[in-house]
Image 1 (cartoon, helix red, strand yellow):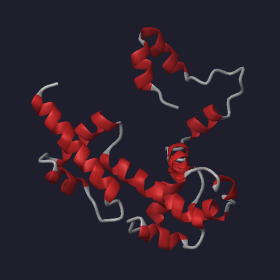
Image 2 (cartoon, rainbow, N blue to C red; image 1 turned 135 degrees about the vertical axis):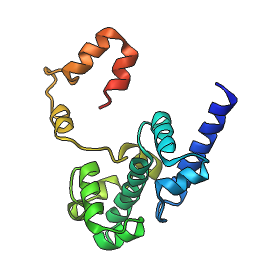
Image 3 (tube, helix red, strand yellow; image 1 turned 90 degrees about the vertical axis):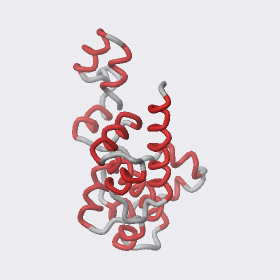
Image 4 (cartoon, rainbow, N blue to C red; image 1 turned 45 degrees about the vertical axis):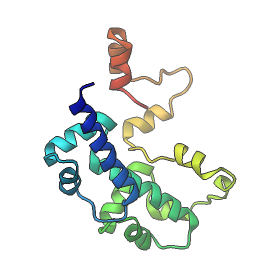
Length: 171
């Protein structure tokens, strides 16, 4: 790894740390890119290459993660939670929450979360990290043991190289 590549990774890590720390603040890609001494487009490409998702997607995942914790408490309304985590549009927040969690914020808040009360927060965070829910993912998650859990295109890639298969498909 060259010194320039190492410096880029350090700046990307600093930007990611800022998103983790200041998720409730109004952050945008151009501001994060300026702090990393990159153009917004280059910053987004480098961030995605390093972390597997765009800066905006990473920030929204952090916000939804925090929103899930606040909604489990049950003492704040969905609107209050939306504003608390740094989202300015309730509609966009609800859409993104539903996309990542698989149910609306109101339904998530109304559900009983007492079974997770005995799980340490650090373990819960790992297992409850929001992931984009797509119709194909729902179908794969309900596959029976007799059915393969790998889409056909991933099988074709795996025949070519196991590394390519790992990069091409993540459950």
